[in-house]
Length: 303
Length: 303
Image (tube, rainbow over all chains, first blue to last red; front, side, top):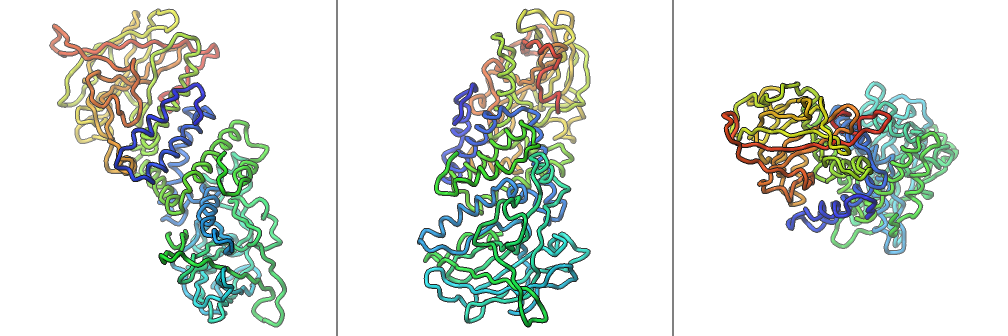
C-alpha cells in the first residue's frame, strides 16, 4: 500500500469497517478494491476536479445503458477499452487449461451478444438483409481437446457486424432482427458449416463517453474485423471467442486488446460454389467440464 | 505491478496504447488507473460474474442521478462510503498547510451542497419550517491562520439536515427550498452568528445501490450529526468542512470516514436568550491564498 505523506492508517480504517458477517469473498474483493482505489488516488494526487469529472463520466456511462433501452452497454465498452474484459477473460480461462492440453483460445464477449439468435440448419446462411460484404462459406470441426474425438450436437452460436460495421440492434433501419446471428448444431462428425460474411473492421461508436476517453488518450477507436463465436457442448467448458481475418490492418492495435494468434485465420478462394467465392476453416477444441457438471464459466451463458 | 500467472505484458500493452498527444497528466492518471484496475482484477482473480455484477452496479448508480433530476448523486455517495472523497479532500488540503501553521481541518463536501443558499443577515435563523430539533445559537470568528487577525466580509455558507435526517431537496413535503441553508458575511470583527438546529445523526438512504453495498460489507449506514460549512474570503483558501456535536454516538464509525478531532464541538447551555437554550462556538482559521490569487481548491466553489 502506497503511503506517501498522507494518513497512513486511513485505508486500513476503511477496510476495518467491513463487518464480521461479510462473506470471505466480499471481504477479499473489497479489501483489494479499497487498497487499489486509495493507492491510485494517492499516487496521482487526484484532485477534487478530477474526482468530480470521474464521477460525472461514470454517471453518463451508466445512464446511456438505460436510455438506450439496454441496447448500448457503454460500461461494458469502457471495460473493454481499458483491457478489463480481456483480462477477466484470461483469468477465467487460465484455470481451464491446467491439464496441459489447451482448448481454443477464448476472447471477450463484447456488448453485442444476444440471447435471441435463432437456431439455423447446417448449410444455411445467416445473411438476411442486403449488404456490401463478401459472402463466405465458414466451416470447421468441434473436438475434445484431450482425445481429439469429434463432438456431435455442440452448439456454435455466432454473431457479427454487417459490412457497415453495425450489429442488427444498432442498425434497425438496414437490418432485421437476428441478421448475421445464428446457432448451429454440429453433425455426427462434429462439423459445422454455414454461409456468412467475411467480417469488416469497424470503429467503436464515436458519440459517447468511451470515445471521449479514447480521444483524451490519443487512441484510435478501431476493432479489427471479427466474427464472434461461442461454442458449447454437454460435458465441456464453453468457449467464447472471436475469429479474425489474417489480412486485417488493426490486428496489432485492437482497441479492446482481444486478438490472440490462434484466432487469426485466412479467408481463401472457394471453388465451385455459386453461393460463395471465399471460405474460412476454424476448428474448436473444447476442454472437458469438471465432474461436477458445471459447463464452464462463460460470459454469454451467464449474461 | 502484480504479475501472478497471467500474461506479464498485458498491462504495459494497454499503457503503451496511450498516444503521443495525450497530455502528461492524462498519461499519468490513466497509467496509474490501468495498473491498479488490472492488479485488482489479477489479485482477486475477478470472475466474469463479478465483473458483470460490478458493471450492472455502476450502471444503476449512474442512472439514479438522472432519474432523480440530479438531486440524488449516488456515485458521490459510493465515493464517500469507500472513503474516496475523504481521501481526495486530504490530498487537496495537505498542500494547503505546508507553511507550518494549520488552517481549520477540511472535511468532505457530500452530495447535498446547493448553489442556491440565500444570503441572510447576521443573527437571523436558517430555520424556515417546523421541526422536532433543538434550536441553537451558532457563532464564531474567522481569522487569518498566519496572523490571527479577524477576516471581515468572509462568507460562511452552511447547510444541514433537519431533525428527520433529511435535507430540503430530499424532503419537499416537509421543507421549503433552502430550509436550514444560508450564507452569512462576517462583520468587521470577523464574527458570524445565527440560529439553527443542533444537528441530528442520520442514515444514508437505504433504498439504493449504496445500501446494497453497505449490507454486503456488513456496515451500518449512519453518519454522525453534523453541520456543513464552507468558509471563504478574498485572498484566502476556502475551507469546506463539517462540525460534529461531541455527544454523538457515531463519531468513531462515521460511514463516510469524515470526522476529524478539531471539528468535534460541544453544544452548551445558553443563558438569557428566549430564542435558544443551547449554543455552539466554532472558529475558522483560513490559509492565505497563493499570490496568483486562486482561491484554493474547493469542492463547493467548483461544483
